[in-house]
Amino acid sequence: MDDLYIKRVLKGELAAYGYLVRQHQATAMRTAMSIVKNETDAKDIVQNSFIQAYESLSKFRGEAKFSTWLCRIVTNKSFRFIQQKGRQISVQKHPLNQDLPITYNEGLFQLHKKDLEALLKKGLNQLSEKEALCVQLFYLEEYHLDEIEEITGFTKSNIKVLLHRGRKNLYQHLEKGINKQQ
Amino acid sequence: MKEEDIIQELFDKTELSYPIAGMEEAVLKKIAIKNVYKKKQQVFNWIGKIGVLTAICLCFFFTLTIGEADMFYLFLGAPFILLLLMFPLETIFKQTIKQ
Image (cartoon, rainbow over all chains, first blue to last red; front, side):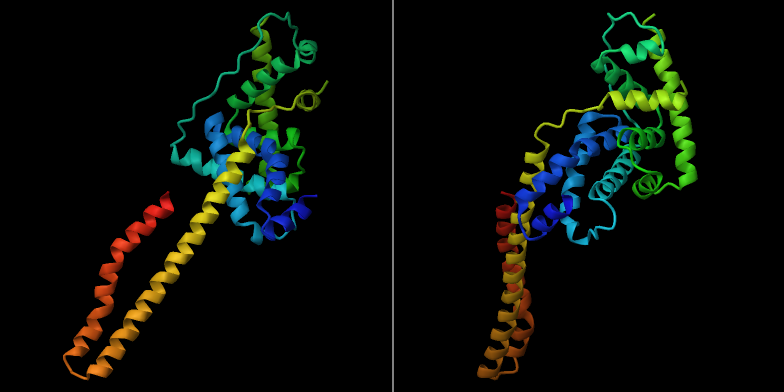
């Protein structure tokens, strides 16, 4: 479906690009957030990424998925952004509903969806940028290792290490988050 | 349950959404503005090229018709005089593009 809209955009139909933005904005936003950890900055990066993708659309060969190509642009822009900021990243706080009695593991799965989301966002924010990126791309966006390699430029072995570390760290952060409620 | 399975199941239960309202409109608007800017830039470049070429041709023609050696210096200097005159024109165009 993306290919059809890409062809229409290349013919000059700007409105067709709106479909591509709608389809991939959530993924792009989550990718940017995993690295920059700030919603305002992530939004700017995603907007600029979409604009760059539009300007480079004629160079898109269609060998990979459009989402993979777009995520690569978002990833590159995000890392460049944090490098320019000198790694002064502000971590956003996600308030957790304090009222639910929670036991670990069972409690995790009994959490209200909003609270679980807040807990996961907080956990991801605590991870390093590379760990959070790999965990988000693998578990949330369900990309294969090949695609993650293409998006991030990391080697497969590096990605596996980052996933392993990211999982462990995220698990520990979730455990801390749940234990605070008890 | 394995740690990996727990993490996967947690992510399956949630979408992890962030506020992205207005993203589509903002992106399309910025692209439209950039397209207008590019067209104006192209027009400005073409006017500049034609202007310089015209100046050179006019000076060459002027030198040939008048035929005096001193006019050769006018021929050499005329494009630069025209470029100086084009600077205010360029400023006006850039202000139009910015708007």
